[in-house]
Length: 182
Image (cartoon, helix red, strand yellow):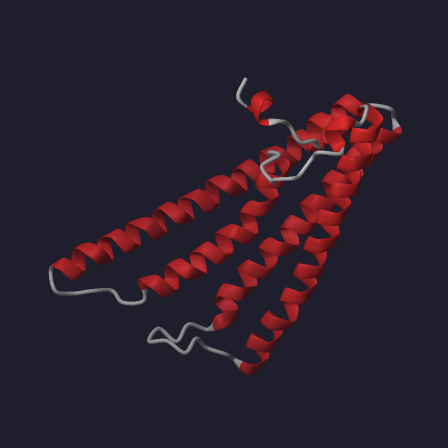
């Protein structure tokens, strides 16, 4: 059951990653078109602003995918010296700290969004973008990451409690460089 759940989470996050990739590709096309237009004496204007917004949104949404694909970096000098149970406990502690940290970030993002909505804040740029339009998907991305981290933590904890240390390590562990390239 836990393996299927993690498989579904990974599939869901792959779909999110594809959508984020499409958004980044569209943004790159937008910037490229603006560069061409500048060569012809015209410009959209604001491409730097829009691309900054896109990067912030892509980062917050992409973190859950990176976590489930074991793409986050950890220093594992102590972990590598432990047995399977010890490695699982290090992995769980690491994931719990990550989930807690991301939860705090998500909670701290909401007042920023709320203030922008309440004050009807706009960017102090030529585009005068209503900030909540950008901050809301950015905030939801952090909430998504926190949710994915906690769901993954609970799933891995169940694996450890069932004594499935290898499955837990495969789900949330960290691998040495030589293992990653084999």
